[in-house]
Length: 257
Length: 224
Image 1 (cartoon, rainbow over the protein chains, first blue to last red):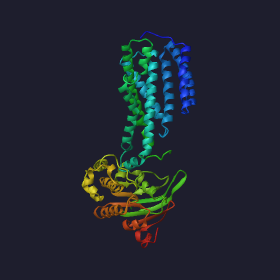
Image 2: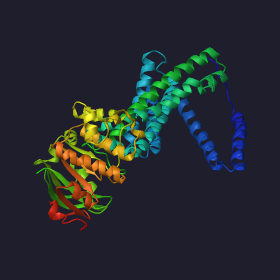
Image 3: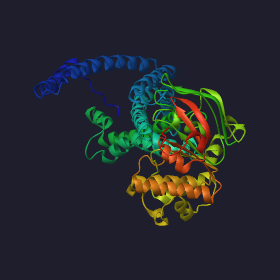
Image 4: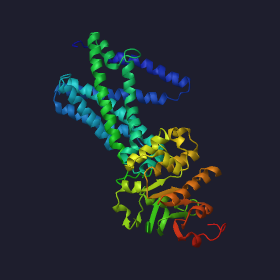
């Protein structure tokens, strides 16, 4: 894994031709996405360049405190971003923040403890970013589903509470389906990996000149790590968030109340 | 007295739904009558604490509702909502769930026949039932918990005449055969006459009259 390639700014500029093509297709077929494609291109350039320099600094400093600070910021922004997808869940920020923090800390802690990765910036920063990013997507999907399902199932949940069921019992089918929808995307893509698509890490390593067997092994480690982090994040987020729909007296709160 | 309500008020979204309601509900069959939107259903939901009033007090058998364990209260005072909302699965699954929550042995046949449903319905999937059958399955599910009080929110509003008659007959039989009290919300004074012994009339969030059937609703056809 010691090979390294150099990418010039000119090569990046050349790849913009494909962005122009995407915008042209949108314009031609009236998909009305030209503006979004423009924003996406500029944002990806600015954000990735900034994070590239930040990572460079962190790699050079090689102290775990900076790594910890960067991952904390990622967790915070991840929770804020996911909250926008979970608008129908009351006070969704704290469940999301805790879900991302727990998923990130436990997954990274475990892979380091098992000796899969060294506890250095070079490993923790990229793996941490993937872990937190995937945890964010999964918990956002799970809470989005939870909000929709709680709204659609009000009558059934309240009728179950009316039988003397606890909030946990009444919400259980809804929480189960929400957890499932948070996890299913990664489970499905893990099933088809290598057949229908090549995951990013493997592609990156092959492009960088790594041995295919190394690329595959690292990719497998990451996929399995992500499965763990996605499950933990969706579990923690749904378990903490469903309670926000109920009062302490096992009553279903009014929507928006 | 089964329920005593004192100065119970509740507003929702800035609108007053219940305005200083005071009423006594004795054991037996009480009908809460009044026009749509008067606050009848909201009042019923307060009786097993699916919601709490903003001010005022409600007592069940002389003790404030808040002093009862909320889940035990709901098993003793069982609410059957206006629209059926069964769990996925069969009718038996639903009855077994309710019986397990109340820690009661399951007698599916008896609960169903008390609710006016043939025991054959036990194995039917709930999504294959008509609304009228679902409504009776809801009643049977509540009865599987052997409650002391049944709260019924417009139990026949979604039903055709035949189904309505079947549900009403089942409720009358419950009164005859079991020592179970009913609190029934109805917009139909005729139904209150058929099923009620005691009547509370609610208009615009206020209890305007409460008393024995003959005093509050005098003579057929006099209207609410």
